[in-house]
Length: 153
Image (cartoon, rainbow, N blue to C red; front, side, top):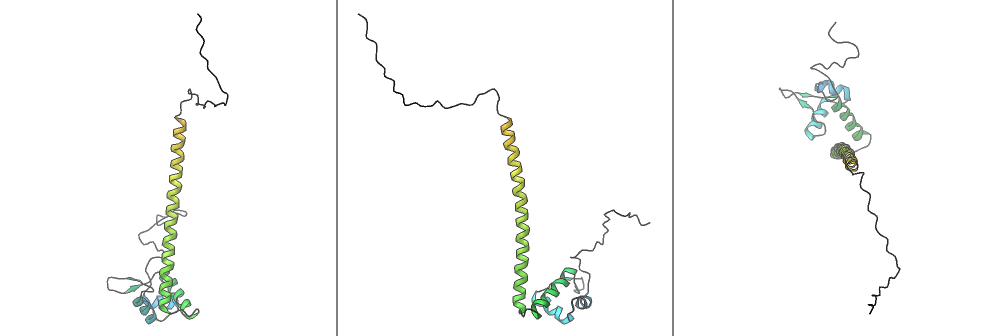
């Protein structure tokens, strides 16, 4: 037994994610259906920027390969030039960042609203119950005439 049991969330030092750069350029080219020289060109243009090893070799992640496929589809199927594709990618990244920021702000807003409700409840709980609320005296339109009493002689 290797120390892991079924159902445990074991996180080893080499956990692979969608962002983990593991594919060399030849494998990434094969997985994306593109020529390695095309991948180098996309890297130079800034369309897909893989991580680099200490020896400056490119390492592509699963997300990079998906992006390569999207670039190819936009270029071949939609007829969009590479400058347009770069702008589309930038805008998609910007939208994703803004959506993330909106989610953060909504969470902060919900927290602030909950804190405000707690403070409001604390204020209401601090009211003295032995005091009676003041009610305004209603003004009437009755006219009162005051006449001084005549002195009795």
